[in-house]
Amino acid sequence: MTARRSCPPAPGPLEQYAAGFDDLFDSLAQRRGFRQYLTGLLAPRERNKTLTCLAGAEPAAGAQHPAVQRLQFFLSESPWEHERINARRLERLLDDPRTAPHAGGVLVIDDSGDRKDGTATANVGRQWLGRYGKTDNGVVTVTTLWADERLYYPLHAVPYTPAHHFPKGRSDPGFATKLQIAAALARQAAEAEVDFRAVAADCAHGDQDGFRAELAAAGLPLVMALKRRRGTWAYGPDAHTPADAARELAWHSPDQPGDWTAVTRTFRDGHTATWWAAEASLGWWGPDGTTRLVVATTDPDTLPEQSTWYLATNLPRPGSPRETGSPHPSADLAEIVRIYGIRNWIEQSYKQVKDELGWADFQVRTDPATSRHQTLVNCAFSFCWEAGLPPPPANRPTRPERGHPIAPPGTLAPGPTHRPQLADPHHHAATLVESLVQHAPTSRVTEPDQRSQYRPTTQPLPPTPALTNHR
Image (cartoon, rainbow, N blue to C red):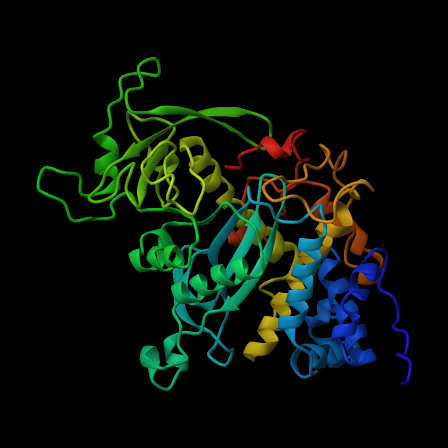
């Protein structure tokens, strides 16, 4: 058998990471394209990471440059399977004791919408884009992400195809709603042996009874938000919405909390805040029912809309009749609040991936090419964790014991690194690794129309990340 030709190495620690995927590519050109694409994604840039940017060419005049055309062929035409690349990426994360998921983590489901003009791009359509808070022309990708209080990374991503792309519309056998895709991805994560405490999602998913029932039927624990005015059938004098149920709970003062329990939350900057949580009843939902309604808020008296969560969960209450027969461990009020608090990491993850690694910057037409780009972005994102986290002690097991996360040291870096301007991407992959990994994400999210002018400075991880509930 002819020996493989050696491939020009990627810069710094990226070569060791890229070499772990070499057996999934059949040709030298594919292996070289994989390295060049990741290098371009990881390079700090002040313009969109289109193919010309990834190749270090001029935006328009360089479109026909051979290096740009090679990347175009690698992304759109070259025969390689992005599913196998993503499976290998997850395998590395699961086998690394620094990033291996554990039973205290959370599986987050969400969808990501990005603007795209025209009608020629696969999966494009006029639909709700949550990132921009409005309906617009764009592409929506349903995603899953694993997160705990110290790190987070994407698992699977599937673009949603609007019904008008199918011959028979919504009745076409190939059509799948966003909720159907999300349920399939949650099952896929469980089948991949990704440990997690519960599936968490926002009210766009939690308000759907069928979606929650599908996850419960698959044996998955869940904690999902509800809209405060989500209507439920009830007798005349009974509560009809989660907000009604919360107002029926007794509250007098912090010294006489009535039905409420104090929950202390610790944030990334080290400050703590006292929230209040309570079990509420709404229709058939209740503390001992199949579905519990948990309300968490900063002020039980006024229930401020911006800091009040209405959560539905199938995790049993400690000491309830369901606890002994439930397939899931019980969860008290503090645990329910912790689980949903981690869900907000998904917003920071999207910001990091999109703004720094060019998630939405693809300029390809076909569905396979779009999925390939998203897979390569996720590879670059995962590499940042692998390259930036301290190496595990030699006596640590290959994978952590179930339910026992490996806590990393405190701060990963003393301060921000100077960011270079536009230059050859092969020299600056390590700089972006430092900015993404050695500093924790910020809680501030820049408005979409401001992101081209301003990029926020990140802050160090807290000294005790394993004890942090992220808002």
